[in-house]
Length: 420
Length: 182
Image (cartoon, rainbow over all chains, first blue to last red; front, side, top):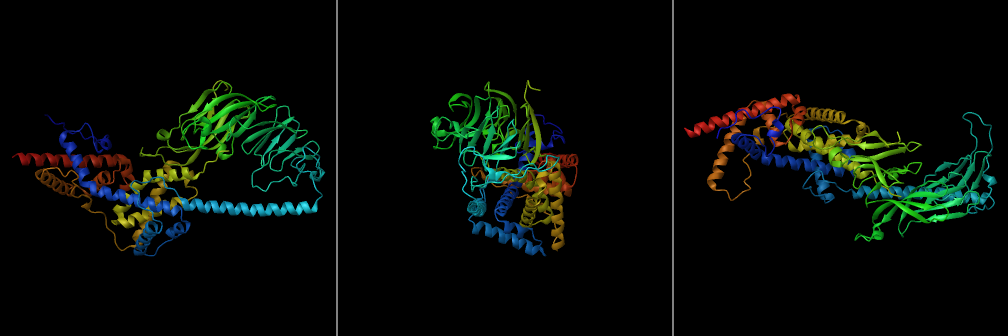
């Protein structure tokens, strides 16, 4: 058999020196195998070193003091090495953390999670005490107020009306007993008649005459949006949606989904008569053999704003589908209620669906295996719903072509076909 | 409402960063320090510096890579300042292979042992830079573009160095086989 001459090629040298190269002559192939075999023990030690470094890195993330100590300059090499040895012993023996068999495997950080949870609880307790003290103080100073009565005039909220001029304060309202001792963010929504619905403090404030009424919104409401005609309010809280008469505060309709455990997420007025809601179901409803209460399919459901009755289920997304933006406090449904943005299960394509037709209209093929990890860090619909701006934690492939590596949010835009 | 913690993504990003750059950084530092433990400490220090640099996630991939290499080189220089030793990794990265197939005949094992001993000698005769590139390619599994910053050469230069090293070894193999036939 005639052997190839000079089949090594500098341009293709990476491929030709892979573990099992192709296109090489027999002796070249034998040489490559011999080089790998001779390096085997050394390569294995290197892999173990990388595993050890990664383990220590992950442990250091969970131990700020250790991190700080590690960053301090050491006067001598011996101390530097000794510190590393001691740190390894602390990590392996003190925490019982063993060297992983492959690196870098996802490692949970329970201690960090516990500290974080304790911090949140402590912060919540402080806020609770402050708010309770504040509420008690004001309730003692003021005559009793009909806090839960619907839409009554609240004279105490009236603030001085200032002359309307550029940059001048027009009105200012403070809360009374309707405040809830829960550290949630208030939301504001303007009506066509220049009224503002305020959640958390549960007010309807008028910019026309600088008056405010207490509104009978759901406790801890996360959303209160005016109907197109400005006569009703759609309130969202605790997994259910309510429609209120804005003038009387009476509940007109309640929507809780089709089954116990359904959670009503973002909801948008389609017209004065209908509302579309994103509904997160539980797997128990679908009859899956999955632990009861785990996330089931996500539904886009249209319901009657006067009766709360379900009109139709427009789209059913499979279990695990993420409504885009909810995790960062943004809205997956366009303001006109026509489109919804979702991300496929486990970080797949970013998709825009037409709610009315139930059809996919556009997608960005962001797969973990192709383009790296993608997470939506910001989201905003244009007012007419024609454009969707996405802030993505985009992770381009590293230059070696092995793995993705960066976390630089890069705004992208999806143009909705037919609406440009 | 659905809530997703940022931690898993952050963790995954560090993991990808580590997978991407740690092998070449470690190979470089190990070569410079000749101490596995010191190299591990220095590379860990580099990645802890990433944690402390709040602006790092805003860098693009190219700048991240440049930053990592700059920090690594600085830490190696610091290491030199603190250390009286200064030596590079020797040819010791080549060793007798592990015979996982214990069913091989003793004659085969003996022949292979002879071949690897001969190969180690042939590599020892190569220029230092060619030996170094072979070590990084076969001992650390790095590709040419990953080897380039570790030896401070261009990727094209690394390809050529690796090509020449293999050509030399291939020629020596042929000469050896001819000698055996005589």
